[in-house]
Length: 151
Image (cartoon, rainbow, N blue to C red; front, side, top):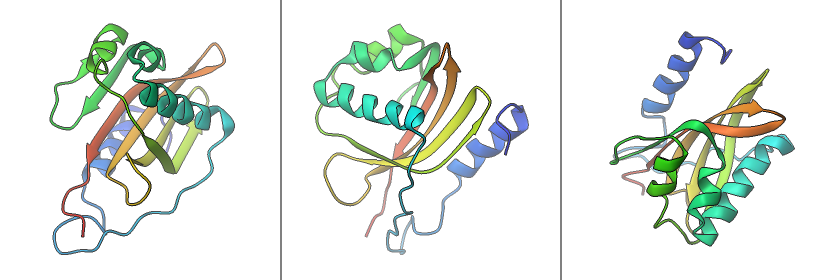
């Protein structure tokens, strides 16, 4: 899938919104295996974990583009670093992020992954879209939501 097309991006969002096997009522949770990311993309996840653990809303906001989005389940969208900083003012504590798919196409990329606040079963999933700006990968959107009905 090429990220430089609107249709490709929409397909990616639709894919992430459709319930996947292993999630949902009556089915046991089955984790998708983790993958290794290229170091530039992995740095984004590790920096996110570090800033979150420190409760550093400024550092979290700096991981995003100037006009980036946070699209969390149950919350209105936050757009731009100031709004993202405000969204993350009360964030903090342990956070573990893992990737199970990614793609890079020129200066655009995405990461599909899962998160948890403690070792063990994933507690939620995310999609990050990223853009390389002056040699640094920044988040253009962070879409996440908790996993419900895990057994």
